[in-house]
Image (cartoon, rainbow, N blue to C red):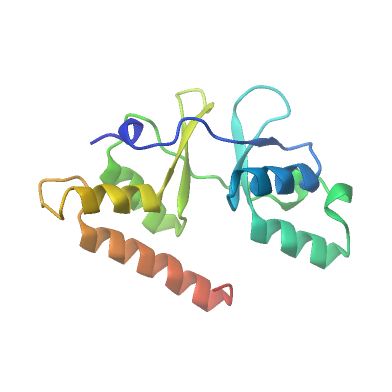
Length: 157
């Protein structure tokens, strides 16, 4: 199975030069905690921002979200996958980089979707844990354990 079969295609995003308050509004309106960040122009992904990034940046600077730009708080070392990648390959990226959500980009780095670990877990459950699927439940469990362990070590759980 390919990423394109499970990814969410309609993805809310923000621009690197926007205020953090814009990212906050997107998170509130879309009930999400992670938003891909696009370059000031075009659809190329340049980062990812989380609700935690916003909170920590504002707290550390004693600043309101409307006074800080997304680029000042976002994670710039963004990991992505392609719509043509297998679910197993996407899950390995998530495990190796301890992330729960993966922006999906085309060959030019433009945002075309997002894939979450929950998307993969739901597919594994639908498949009934059959070994002929790209990602087995024990692999998903290992990925989640790796992510949680990293958060516990960092004190962010």
